[in-house]
Length: 133
Length: 70
Image (cartoon, chains in turn cyan, red):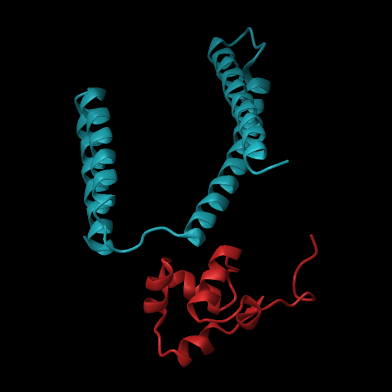
């Protein structure tokens, strides 16, 4: 399979996933969408094995690593700012239960952020050992 | 880091695509190396030199003044 055919396949699957999402949303049935999403990902992974052209090398891996790290850093900052905003706005607000719920959700988001940082630190220890320290 | 891959490629009458195929990398990687946008890893630099039957120093010219200090 050529790389362009593979890219076309991804585009078709993406369109089908969007249509499936709209349909699942309308009938209020999440299961078909989740099943379809997993099936779509499985098809992409299987099709990737049959691509003749080279898809990945050290440069593409470096680009992916750099992209992932930058995305993670931006997500941390955005998530932290967003969760703190929700906590300030909502937590401790006894007068408005809606805002109070927002504050609790903010605390949850803050915990998710802290969890991400802990995973990052643990993985960095693992990779430091792997690459020598 | 400057390099003379384009010169060696011309000497061996090779396209970027053909060289990439021999080295097991994408054509875009060869192009990025030639234009100086990407510095290859040491193993890839070694593979390039080995392919052209020469040394890494013959192909890659390390410019200490151009490199950012770390």
